[in-house]
Image (cartoon, rainbow, N blue to C red; front, side, top):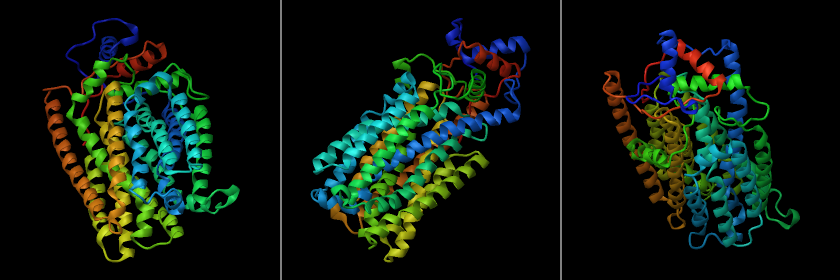
Length: 520
C-alpha cells in the first residue's frame, strides 16, 4: 500500500529506502498509479501455493505450540480436582489462587522485550528454546512436594512463557495482509482456534492421565504435569526445525521459500501496509507508540477479555464440581463441549467479519454471548441450565481473543509500533490473568457472585471501548478521504536485496493503492 508522507526520504542509503521513495522511483519510470494485483512473475495458482505453504509451516506450527502453551499454563485446574489441592494443602489461605496468579507476574514483566528479542535472534531459536525449557519446568511441577515448590515452578513457567504469545502474534502479522480478505485476521482465528481445541480436550487428556495414579509411586495429578511436559519438550525440539523466520530476514528457514518467493511476500505486505521491512531499532521511536491512546484502548479490551477467559480456564472444572455438583470424572470431561462450541463460534464470527469487512461488531457479538451467558451460569437454580450458560460464556470470552488481535493488527501501521502494540496487548492480557486468578475465591463458594459481577462489568466496559474506537475510526477515515491527514504515518523501509527491490518495483510500476484506512 502506498502512502503520501509530508517529509519524503531524501537520502540514498540502499538499506533504508523509504517505501514512498520506492513508489516515486517506480512512478518516474512508468507514470502508473493503479495497483490491481501483485504478480512478481508468479501465476495466480503459484501465488496461492506460496500462501498455502506459509500456512502449513507457520500457522500450523505456532498453533500447535500455542496448544501446549495454553494447556501447560491452565492445567492447574485439572490437577486441582485430581487431588493436588489436598496433597499440597492448597485449599488453605487461597493458596490455589496464589499459585494461579504467580504465573502472571513474571509473564507480564518479561513480555515487552520479547518482540525485540525475536527479531534479533529469530523465531526458531527464540520460540523453540522457550518451549523446550518450559516443558522441563512442567515436568518439575509433577515432582513438587510442597505448595512452595509449586509456587517456584509457576514463577519459572511465567518467565519462560512470557515471550511466546506476543512473538507469535507479531510474527503472524508480518507474513499476511489486511486487505486481501483479511488474511491476518483469519490466521489469528485459526491460531487461537487450535488453542480452543487444546482446551476442549485438555480435560479428557487429564482424565486419562489420572488413570496412571499409583504408577512409579506417583499420584494421578503428577502424571498430568509430567506427560504434558514431555510432549511440550518434544514439540519445542520440532519447532526449531519447523518454524520460519520473518519474511524480510536474511536468516534461512529450513526447507522453506526461496529468495524470489519471499520477495513476493514482502512486496504484497508492503503494498498492503507499506511496512514490510524493519527499520533499525530506535528506542525513542519504539516508545513513542505509547503516545497513541488507541493502543491502550486495545490493551484494556484485551484485559477485559482475558480476565474472563483465564477465570474460566483456572476455575471451570472446580465450578463444575463445586457449583454444579458433577463428579471429578464428569467435571474433567464436561469441559470439552463448551470449548468445542467456542471454536465453532470463533470460526463463524471470524467468517462474518471477513465477509462484511468489519471488526468492531464481531467483538460486540461475542460480548453479547458473555452478557447473556454469565448471569445464567452464575444464578440460575438449575445446574443443567447453568451448564448451558457455560457454553455461552466460554464462546464469548474465547472468541474475542482472536477478534481483538485482528482488530488491533488491522489498525496499526509501522513495524516497531506493531511490536510495541503486540507486547502491550499481551502484557495487559497477563494482567487480566492475575485478575481472573482472583475472581473465584474459596470464601465465595459455591455461587462465586463477586466473580460473576466482575466478569459482567468487564464485558460492559469492552462494549463501551469498542464503540468509542469505532466512532473515532469512522471520523478519522473521513478526514483521510478528504485529504486532511495521513493515517498511521510512520517510517517504513525496503531492503536493498535486488530480488525484493525487483518485485516491489514491478508492483509499483502498476501503480499505488489508496492510503491506509482504519477497519472498524
